[in-house]
Image (tube, rainbow, N blue to C red; front, side, top):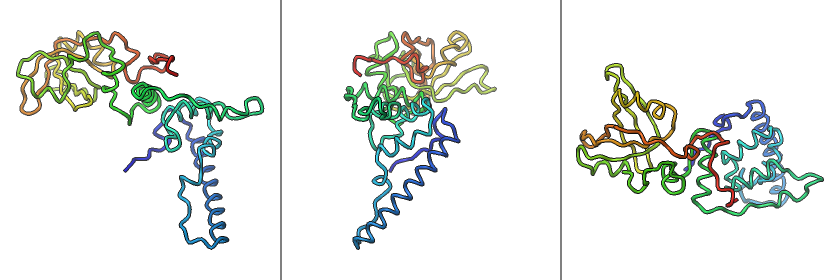
Length: 269
């Protein structure tokens, strides 16, 4: 199955213009359905009516988007709102921004070449975070490991979450992942607990007050952490006692970086 998210999920879309778009789409669907029903009656067809996906094509939906401002059209393309018709977001962005006119009658025939799969997924991930602060594609850590590793520490020596269970107590490891949860209970005497997630699972970090004070900036203002520490046995789910936070040498590659800082290889466009 699949989950359909509404336009409210996107950051920066006007509710008024979103409602206008939905109303116009419903009107167009209603007229197409009526035309289809009349055609079936006149031909005495017993086949079921067309589904909604076949009633509106890509250019119908693109035309309906004229109610949005330019920056909203960019968000719609970034958020992959047209995946039903074309998963190449650059094609969609071009169609939205450069609608055919007397000066440019053939712009709807311009198609961008596909990029290598991982690079396409990388751009899509960055666009997802820019438009909705989440992504439904490959896990960001999988992409970071393969094409955008932002740390000086060798990626092949980073221990995945799933492999942490095989490490012995007090083994030194380097782990990395998206920050999912930060907790500092009042009864923990200044201890900070962080849950990271990579493409293999979750892992827990334990941070002493002095370590937290030393690396507070990184632990507070980044979406991804790469840390060095010691494995602490705790039943089936060991944790890592953090001794050092490894700084990102290329912060532009971190998910959620400001759009003007995103690292892109334009030679592949």
